[in-house]
Length: 144
Length: 420
Image (tube, rainbow over all chains, first blue to last red; front, top):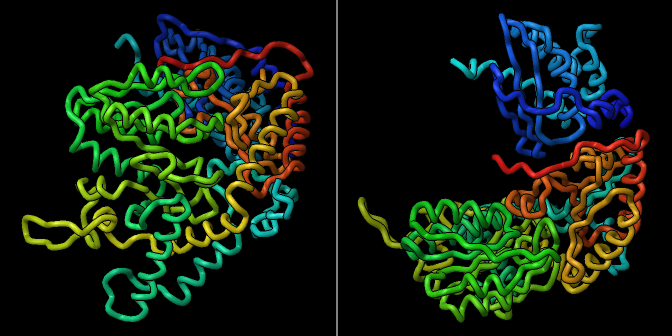
């Protein structure tokens, strides 16, 4: 395993130029995630209309893997239903834990995170954004 | 510098290979490696002398008891305690600090009393006081850190007053390596009529310590940070204070007489050692102290300061580095950040070369906020490190951060999270 398997160009690009960075003021769902051991700290907020995620943003600070993963995730889930987003999360966990599979096009840029599976201590960095998104859904609609 | 190749004394350096590379261990502020003599002492104890202490009226138990008490005497002489009975064995410095916070604090602190800590405390000298202040209504105050990463004694002076009952400070910061003027701090505390405690987790392993010269009432240390086994630590306390204090934990070993609804307690230090203690750990700690004394604590300190100074100079050239170390009174602890490369990523970069450092908040979140960083990378040196380890660190760092550099565009700035 080489460092280039982990710090891929796509990951570094998302880290250095994150997509969807910020907070959505009137988000339908939002949550905050924190990795106690390394201090990664992420806030995820999404807007859902008629069951479809129409906007997704993240903010916070952390390592390249946690930040890039959240950037990629917010790209990916836009236009998906909540159920589809949850399914993508499950696929993503499998992928970064090293489960062999064909992860194809639906994973988009997230495919660049396959190398994380060779760095077990970094898996929780990669999954932080996704777990926070699921946590936001689990907490329920902010307006309810 | 220590000239002898002390790595040979530590089996792990001959055994562990990370990705085929030898171990370059720069995380001794978290825990140190163990010399063969300590590992052998544990084996020898369990193979030949294992029995419970202070109760078996048989030869083996007497030997185990003697070994345990010899360890106590060894710790006492190591930090120049006048008497072994001033040493209470605990699990680690954290437990020692908790023991004082609970056993002294719960009975002696009242609504409005003040406890003074500092800006550079480890969570182990913060959280116990949070708990005790909630129980007693005592107020916590802080010695300010100035911009040169040292404690500002004027702010101690300003905080001290008739309500001050305790001043508890870290001797050497686990993040900055700053050696704090604890002798002066204890003197000022006593002048104000307060007690003084020193968290020695990062000083006992690294420099000669004389608790009577420091003048502290309490001093906490951890065995595993000074070549000893995990799970053994000690509290030094002035004996008259131990006599007046209530126990911390209750159970066997710490009693004199027990009745169905009441009990009275054994004399200190036994009053504070409930249950079967970590006998093997104490025996191992004694071996660790013997090892350190053979090298000489002044040599250990000089060696580490020289390595720290060397590392500071060598790392200063690294692109984007910021080093958090006082200009003087630093030790072998170097905390740093690199612009655009998160400390956790630095740790992974170095791990790829077999170099172990720590990245994170180092159990000092309030200090991180003062430094206005979320976390730092920290290399910490010990007697078994040498300049080649520093060179390896610098080379791996330069090579690794180059991965983050080609695009030469700004990465999101690391900021303090204050909303937690």
